[in-house]
Length: 244
Image (cartoon, rainbow, N blue to C red; front, side):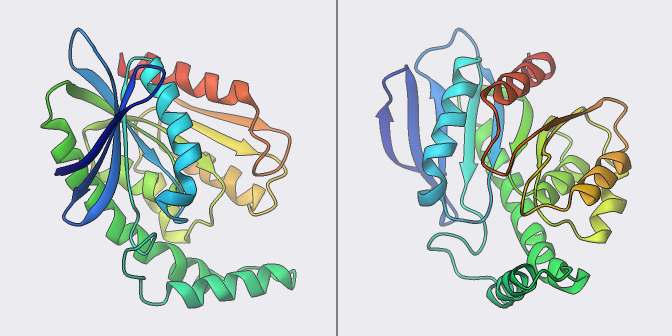
């Protein structure tokens, strides 16, 4: 991990940009802490860190205010990273189906999501290795937001992640439902009831499939961008219970 810049934000948050094997990322930490702090990995959709930065830094500030460090990395095929083979065609097929009001086929969803999950999860694990080796950062670790299929896979294969807050809003391959049954960590799942880009019933079926004994579904009225402020406060309380 190589840090490329550092700045102190106005609320006592230190933001450092880094690269890890040429993958860009950000780390946000408290300017001072009496002991190593837990870590929250901030997931996001594959739209590029530049585009997602305002929302990511807002989430990071909230995490640091709660006594955590927060970090994120650029997803495969996003930003300036090489595009994933077939992803652009899958996105075009997805847009065409949604514009025509047609069902989105399993083939489109698989082509769009599964290669991303297969590439992204080992990169998140490598980032976690590097982040936990830094002074001032310790366990436990949580995962928050992003592509829900990435969160599912991480929850299954990464034992250092002990709790996850997931956003129900991305298309989920059928094979991920089988993986969801293997998830056992506490879950906090946010669902926007009128999300125009989400299959509500599929989101409910996925929640039902999770194997976790502790899983909570927070459903709010409104579309994808209408998440109420108190939803973030509820998520912060969830991580406070499980990471501290």
